[in-house]
Image (cartoon, rainbow, N blue to C red):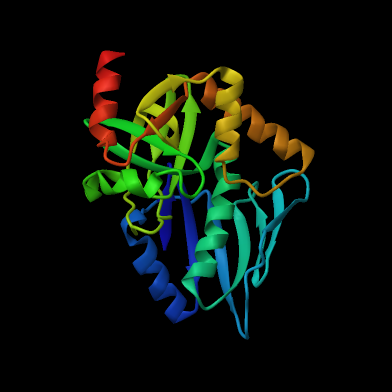
Amino acid sequence: MDVEVAGIRVRLNVSHRSLDDAAHRRYGAFRSEGEPALTLDVIVRDGEHTIEAEPVVTHGGGLQYALRYGAVEADLDLETGTGELRVPDDVLYLDAAFRITLTLLLLERGGLLMHACGFVRDGRGFVLFGPSGAGKTTVSRMVPPEQVLSDEVVAVTVGEAGVTAHGTPFYGDLGISNPGSAPAAMLARLHHGDDLLAELSPAAATSAVLNSTMFFCHSPHMTERVMEVASRVALCGVRSLTFRRETHVPSWIDTAVQAA
């Protein structure tokens, strides 16, 4: 099956029937057709398996990478657009590998995968990010499900026109995500407290974006590239959004954006 996220199409060649069926259920809304940027041959591994605390992604030079994450193993060549993924017969392992692979594909296109909730209102995208407990799930509950890009993981790309927010099939506790993209009208780091919306300095904005970016390849070259893209995102404007639990954040944001 072909899955498209943020305009990047990945072909998952899953020969194992039960895992293929689970992948179709998990990624069905994001199915697409056309030439893929990457074709992954997915091989099912037998036996007892676990996922270690942290994935390790090794940069082999050029656009070649090796992923090791407990029972998950992958060898990727983004230059040729090919790769092999070895996972147990469980879609959660496939999902973990797919997320990590997408971080690499996005970076090559000036994009990041962020721990964020995202939604679209009136054609405008909103990306609200932060660690667990910051309020992503709380805000997502305030938005009609069909408007939610994801309650947990949002892709962002940056170009001459600014930042674009993209839905991903990677969801959190609410289990809500939808395909789609929209120009980002707001990127904000979430906090709990009295209602307050404040602009962050470029340095603070870059730090906030980096702290919510999903990336696992820590070679000097790749780290520099992530920082470069995060800085470009930050220069488009990032805010600190503090809210009380009883505040209807989407409506409050609408008012703030209209007043800006």
